[in-house]
Image (cartoon, rainbow, N blue to C red):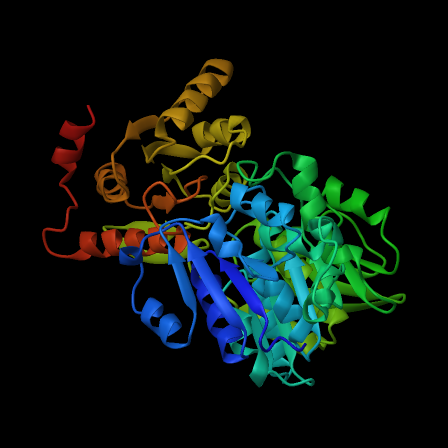
Length: 496
C-alpha cells in the first residue's frame, strides 16, 4: 500500500491499538500513539513500542498529536463521536481501524460475522468447522489476538474468520470519511465501503446504546458487513429476527438464511420436532442432514441458533457436511459463555460473564431447567430491563446483585414484582467475590449458580474476561478447606 514514510496516529492503546502501532512501525510508518491513560497504567508494551520508534502521547489526547498525521486509526474503545476525533475530522484527517486495514491487506478470503448476540460462539464454531475440513484457518477480529499481527503469515489458500463489532464496522462505511477532501494514495483503499466475501448478521436487538446515539445508528453500523458485497459474495441472515429479515429487502445479491422456527430455501433449519429434530442444510432443492439436535453439546435455544448460523456460513465458505457434523456435536462452548466452572457441595457453577446485556441474561436463564441462583450487575448500557426482570422473578430462587447497576436492577425487579406478583430473594453485595460467597450460602444441592451479569464489566474490571476469571477464582476458593461453604444451620440463620 506504499505506507512507508507516512505518518499515522493510533488512538487508543488497548490490545488492538498496541498490535497496530507495532505493525505499522515495522512497515516503516512514522507512528504516533495516544491514550487517555497515564504511563503507569501500561506494562512492558510501552517499552517495546518506544523501542520500535513509536512516539507515545499518554495521559490525554492533545490536539498536537494530530499535527502532521495523514491518517488516524481508531481503537474500538474510542467513541465515534469523541471530541478528539471531531478535531481530526475538522482537519480533514481520514479515520480507519486495525480491522479495516487488516481486511485490505489480507490475501485470504474472509468470513465476517456480526450480530447483537452469539457472534463469538458462531465465529468460533465456523473456525472449527473450517479447521475440521482441513483448511488453515485464522480466527480473530473482536475476539482473540488482533489479526494484523498475523497478516504477513496468512496465505491466499488460507481462510480467515472475523467477529466484527458495531464499533469496528462503523469505519467500513464510506460515510465515516465524508469529511475527507484529500488523502495520500496509500490510504485511499481504506476509505471505500467493504464487506467480506461471506458476511453474516445473526440478529439485531438493542445493544450499546450507551455508545450509539440511536438504534438506527447501531443498525447502520452493523449493515456495513453486508452492504458492499461484490458479485458472487454471500450474505447470511437470521430469519427469526425481524430486523435482519427487513435488512434483506434492501440488499442486492444472494442471501442465505438460518432459522429455528421456519423452513428455509437456502441455508440451515430444523426438520422434525424437539430433541428428535435434526439440523439440515437446504441448497438448490437438496436437503442434507447435519446432526440431531439432541447430539449438540451447547445449552440453550440461542446456541441452537448459533449452530444453525455456523452451518449456513460454513456451507457458503465450502465446509463439507461431515466437518459440520463433527464440530456441532463435540463443541462444548467458548470460555465465559455458559461455561461450566465447578460443582461445589452439589451446586453447579456456571460462568456467563459475556452476558453484557439484559437480553443475553434472558438467553442464559432460558438455558437451564434447574433452580437458579443468579449473580447480576455491573455497568448498565442504557438498555431496557423489563423482560429480564420478569424472567428473573420466574426462573430464580435468589438474585444477588453487585456493581454500579445493582440499584437499577433492584428497581426493575420491584416493578416486575408489583406487576406480576412474582418474587425471588433479592440481595445486594459490594463485589463479585461477595456475591459468589452469598450464592454459596443460599444455594442447595441440585441448584445452578449462574454469573450472567446483564451489564458491562467496566465499573470494576478491564473487560468481561477479567470478570469471568475473577468469578472462576472465587468459585475455586469455595472448593478449598474452609473456603466459605456454610453449614445448613448457618444458611438458615443468615437468610431468615
